[in-house]
Amino acid sequence: MGYKLKPNKAVAKRFKVTAKGKLKRHHSLTSHLRSARTAKKKRELRRPELLFEGHARRLRKIMGIGGMHPYAPQKKTAPPAAEAPKSAETAKTAASPKTATSAKSAKK
Image (cartoon, rainbow, N blue to C red; front, top):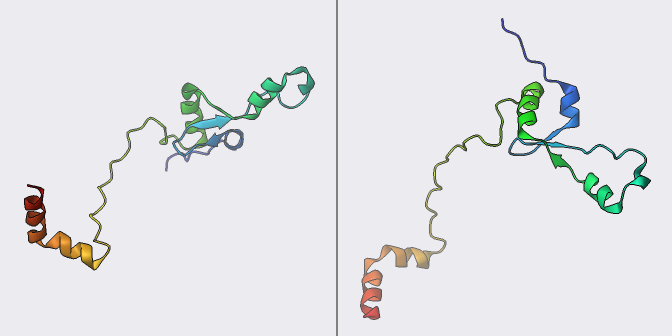
C-alpha cells in the first residue's frame, strides 16, 4: 500500500483557491501600527493579492490539489443541441419550403 498524501492544513487556512485554481493571499502589515500608513496604503492592503504562480504551484501540491492549475487546457464540451421552436407558428414557417422560396421571389 502506498503513502497517502496528507494535505497541509496550515497552508489551506492561509490561502483561498479561486475557481480557476489560483491562490489568493492576505497582505502583511495590517495588524497594528496602522496609523503610520497612509489611507491609500491601508486601502491597498485590504484587498487580497494573487500569489505568484511559481509559489502557487508548490503550495497546491502541499494542499493536495496539485492537479488543479489555472493554465491547464480546458476540456472541450459538445455544442448544445439545437433548440426546438418555441411556438407552433414558427414551427410551420420553419418546416414549409414554400415560404422560403416565396421570400426569395419577393426580394427580386
